[in-house]
Length: 306
Image 1: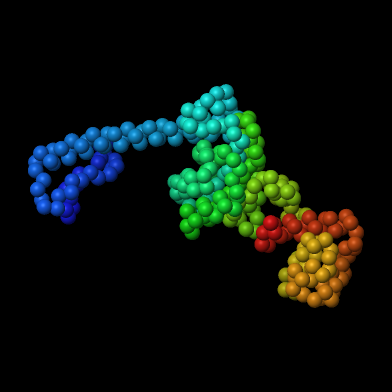
Image 2: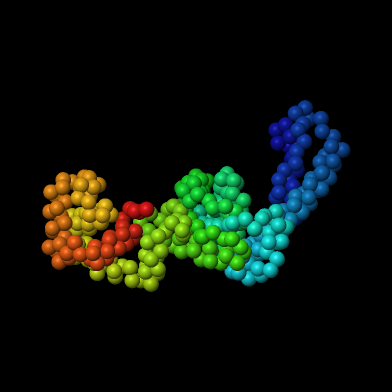
């Protein structure tokens, strides 16, 4: 068909549109021989593109099979050689990265590949259920990875979990499990968008385990229930005050400054907390449990404390 100054033919060797081949003809001088050559070139190019697509799909299948074997710990024999055949060196330290997003899976897959390229990460890419999985040679920076991926995905939400260091192919299953736990911590936090690395979770590893078992909410209610009910009824901030005071190690000046209140107001609130709960805030065990409870509360319900 003629399109302005061009004569174009659709590349569709097997009923699938792969592109358009055209002759630029501003003076309308194309002959029948030119049209024949165009059709012939279209046929050849169409089959070549279909062949190249088949090769790409085959390589993707091989990569996915290798990623599956590494994540499950099966078929470990020859994995290094299989990776070398795909131009990837598995002998360098690796980290498992999992990506969860509200965007379409194909969009996340493409964005993750572009993100890795932009950050100069050498990766093996695959999937596990609805998660995009990246096996990265070198530890990615969590914040840089999330920032770049979010830019590529636009308005879609995105959360990332990063596992521990893999020195050998046999380490991948554990790193994958840890990446999923790090992602789970992120998704169940008050700030579900972002990236969490397992080796940076610290206390939140325990919170994740307790949350999975359904006990963390009970622990928070046990130690903070009276204060939470009081704050809800009186529109006060006793739990937040206690949390900030414990985070500063009990320093009155730093606590008051962080809360933007006077030192005397802080003392009044702490006295009110002791009166309502019966807790002795000077007791080491009490302070320990209250600190754990307030950190859990902040993790589950408030702005991320990390």
